[in-house]
Each structure stands twice: as structure tokens, then as C-alpha cells.
Image 1 (cartoon, rainbow, N blue to C red):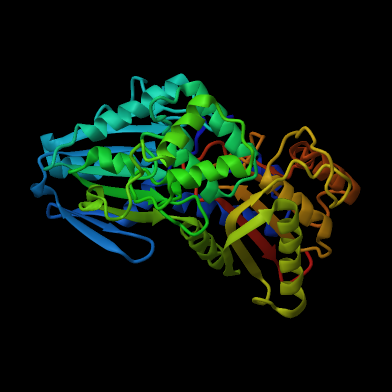
Image 2 (cartoon, one colour):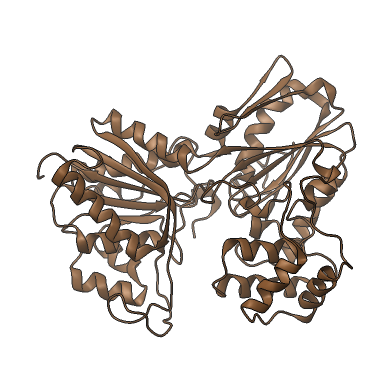
Length: 486
């Protein structure tokens, strides 16, 4: 992992050792498009596009066209709370806009990030003291992370009926905002999280359990802040941009129930700590308050705006392609499934584009977003299922490009894929980039079967490193197809 001081500066996303990686003009176009996409999703740029303060009115424009306006003079104080990989950057950008209009009525606030962006971290000498940035832990909770999450809860609870609470919720908030419901302890929460991540449950099933074992998720943070006005600015890292899924929806209504959560535990035969099981059973019996639904008074003065998502990055990448003389086409923003399978599909995209101009003729950059996965039980040769294997180094983006490289059969075609947060699975890399000549097919297949792709890509000067970027809008992929063999 890169220390916070090595994060790319706003508007300056670069790839380490680019001079070695950029072997052809097509490689350069791919890297330019990926960098432009990540830059567009950086917190300062998201806030600049979505938030303004004009004549004392806070104006917000969401990615779906929804808008909102809030007269800042109507509030006694305004504070910021939240969590996520982009939360510190979002809070800093918001603070810069709010403080000139609010003066002493800006009450600061508390946010949690995995690697606080300011030099020296949250407590460093150069930290912005107008609000508090605390470190959390991802993906498993710790005593420190839980204590810091409770400070976010305290900041929200301190708001009164005439105050405005702005919640920033971004990718990673589910893990970083880890405040267990009483009487669940930190060790219980850690065991719960570990079991959920390993059981193969759907995201909806996982969230139902998470929300009902939390003091903040599933709308409970909004309930804590009520009757203050609560405005949530979300940067989506989930396919479909459902606010109830982003960060497990701490400030939005929840339609799941304790019975849903308990059913998930029983369906997958999960071995949870007694405190968790007893808590869920008590909730299903009506002995615990449910998460708030849409008609709960907590949401009478609450709104959520998704201000950044996969399309934010994809559209910027398409513009970058056009600037370089290529037709940029966003093919999909919701690619999911096994990374190895998605790699084949992206190689096929390149080959169809070259063969018959689908979906457009070369020179073109075909762009996709979404989130693929790696199933570690796929341990046998080729595509077959096998016994579980101990993973090496790499992640879904590395596996996607390695799989694509096996299938590419044309010079002048490049497939590149990164996780926009800069960390792809179990590696220090963001992803990788390949063409038909990058990897030998036998070596790539062997590395894929062992889930140890990153060293192979690194040896081939095809591993992409940015360091933690301070944002997360899922994966970003560029398939570059030139109009001539290079």
C-alpha cells in the first residue's frame, strides 16, 4: 500500500513507470483515458461540478439531473459528517465552498477515511482544523475504527432542529463507518464482516445483515441527526447507484428487516458470534427497533444526491479519447461477473470493432465500467472449477487484462483496466494493460489458475500503479483499437 503522502495530487493522476509501460501509441491513449476518468471522479472535481454557493444558497446538481437548493441563512449551523475513501477530499472541497458564506456558523464536523489525505494524516500539523478527519480500517473493523465511527455519530447527534448536516458517503463507507449496535462488540463485528465477505451472499443479503447489526447503517445516522436537515452527497461505487447500497445507506430509508437478516444467516449456515445471532433474533421478534423506512420522520427533512458515479469517469475518458483523435464510446457502465470471463469479452469487443465496425469503426476507444470479481475456488486448470487455492498477488482488473491478452489476436489493440481507487485486490497496483504480445498464453493461464497475475504483469511492464487515488467509482476499462497495425 502507498502512504497517503504518495496519493496523486488533484488533477494529476499518473502511472508509475509510464515510459516503460507505454510501448505503443495505443498504450498511451489507453493510459490517458484511464487517467482522465479517475481525475474526473476525484473529490475536488466532483464537488466543483456538483456544488456551488451563490448568493448564500447552496446549490447541488446530481448526476441524474436532480437539483436542490438550500438557503444557508436559514440554518444556525452547518456541519459535515461522513465516511469513505473519498470522504476527506469531499469534506475539504465542501468546506472551501461553505466557510466564506457561513463564517462562524460553520460547525466543522467529522469524517472517516481509510488513508486521510492531508500531510501527516488526520492529526498532522498541516491538517485542516475546520473539520475532523479520522482514520478508519478497511475491510475489517478495529477498536480504533469503531471508536472513530462513534465520533461521527456524536457529531450528527449534536445537530439541532435549525441546523444543516451534510453527509458525504462514498465507496468504502460500509467498512469505515463501523459502529456496532449494542450489545455487539468489535470482535463480534469483525467476525460478522469476515463471514459475510466469504459466504457468497448477494450484496442485498450482506447489506441486510450489516444494517441490522449497526448503529449507523440503514438510515440510522439520519435518525440520529433528526430533526436537523440532512443532505447527503454520495459518490457511488455500486452498479445501479442505489443510495441504499452506497455505504450501506446510513442516511437513506431501508426496506430490509431483521427477518431478512436472520434468513441470510440461516440460508448460508453462517457461524456468527452469539451476540450477533441473539441480536438478530431479538430484532425479528420485535424486541429491537427496526431500521427506518421511507415514511419515518427521520426523512422528512432529508435528501440524497448522487454527485459522482461510474459515468463520471467513463464520460471523461470518452472525451479524452476524442481529444486524441479516437471515437470514444461508452459500451456499458454495469459490467459484473467473473473477471476472467469479462477479459475474454473485452478482447472480443476489440476484435468485433476491427472486423466489422461494431459498435464503431477504428480508431476507437471502447469504455466500460462496473465491478468484476475473482472466485478463489476456481483453482483447476483452464475454466473448470477446482479446489480452493491460496491467492497470490493481483485482483479482478489484473485478471481481466491477463485473460484478454490471451484472446487478443490483432496488433494495434490494447485492453487496460483499473480500479479507480488505485488498489486492485491483493496487490499494490491499480490494474494492468496488455496487447497481443504482452504475455505468453501458457504463462497467463497458469497465473490465472493460481490467482497470481500481478507478478507476471509486472515482469512484462504491464502493471499499472497510481497509489490510492482518494476516490472510488468502481472499475474503469479502455479497449483501444487503432485503424492500422502498429
